[in-house]
Image 1 (cartoon, one colour):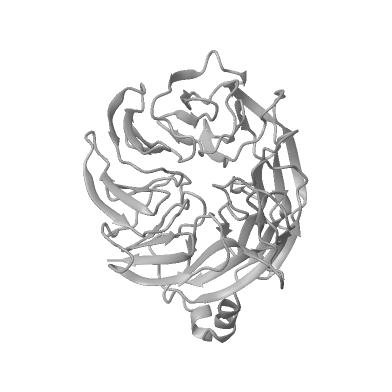
Image 2 (cartoon, helix red, strand yellow; image 1 turned 120 degrees about the vertical axis):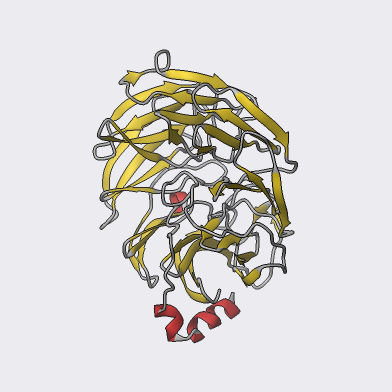
Length: 425
């Protein structure tokens, strides 16, 4: 960590103010459209730990937030362990030491660190799931602000030089840590807070962090925790905030928090995938226990529309963690256990399935007709977005990752457990 901070202090001023002209910023989880599509061109299809690596930078600490890229800077979060002079080790997988929760800025052109700002602390002995981290939600950049969320430990707005504008704690009790990323509507920063009890969705004022509205989830007796990110959609000239939680997905008015409609899927909890909207349908992946389902929902109803507005549902090869990807009239998915599939958007009919192999948590992206599937082991399988399964390339970074890829013209920004890569043609 000390070498990282030293680099920040000695970084030439030009790196802080120079910004290459990028064709498309990637400002939030799943990109500009929030659904994994990029218009970036000439994307790399082949790489390794040495091939087509423009630079790689070691990131201090650990975290599974995906990198975002805006105007020549890369932003991500990390949890840096504060080690005691005499390490006490670990017991039952629970780190003994506290963690500094930080926002990190890296220069896009050079890969050198620009700044690192502490937002919050995680107390010692705070447990998380083995697949989670203390820094899993992805930052959101809008205008001259960076918004970050560290669950109940802290939510903050920073300026582009890393100065904290506001910082506040939201009181709820995550189970296994946090995962859902923030979304932005006008001056509302909207977050899912699906903890172990009394789950809710909340809006904070983007200028001050003050609470705008808070809407409780419909009541269910148990297993209320989830990790999904909301999705904003436009239906009949009205904006809806689609928020998937345990046992139910709800649509909210993003200005008031009023619940507009809901669809229930009882006994399905720990929802992770982000909803997708395409072809007039909201696509929801339900969670544990047992096989997840994929639901196609018509979003024009009011109240409980479980019996009237679900167009179709399937329960084969549906992911518990990676989000779906819609391209034209087809839905592409990668299951947690490495089964890729393609289905018809209008009916859910299966076009094909294929075993990619490995385990998956990262959400796929698509660019120039190619789908990028990143496994937990750091092996990225590139396939064609087509009605038949065709592998284009396999690329191994040889290190664990749960983060999604951030594309730019001719480049891919990829985060692994310890490194940040810029892959360049």
